[in-house]
Figure 1 (cartoon, helix red, strand yellow):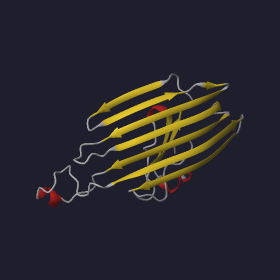
Figure 2 (cartoon, rainbow, N blue to C red):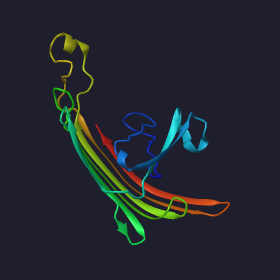
Figure 3 (cartoon, rainbow, N blue to C red):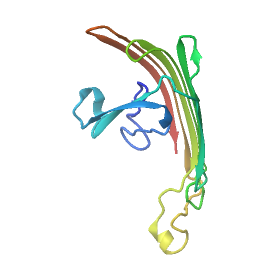
Figure 4 (cartoon, rainbow, N blue to C red):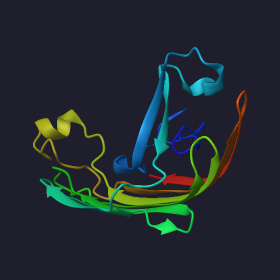
Length: 199
């Protein structure tokens, strides 16, 4: 789970229980709780090897502005800030990324990712509203036959079908509310997720 919302999906192009973590912004992670093995009923049928609960920060100590690049047409930019809104905090982040990879037909992977989080109180007594949006498109070099390489039809980084590719999106909204007293804690989480993958 990320920010109280499940990541695994029962049906997916990559098989039952696939965890698509491409929407995660690492700079916003405030903590990870990990459990090993299929021993915890609350994790459901996805925790065959283990499970992780990833928490996002409610606010940042300072504004983050990052830009970087590398080989294969890789580039990434991130802006994140958390201004005050009265007694509450707003966390906002926007990430854009591009990557071609080493392939003869460039991946043209393009990603846009955003988070807005409104928080009042703390993790013991407080509430938060979170909205996340992620969209990506790409061309992809799929599996290629060894005989095509052996016969020099294509190189080992080539493609048989240059029109292979896909697009995906994940839009979500969630609310978390928690109250703690000396001997009890009450927590309510509600969320909605829209997801699609087209190959």
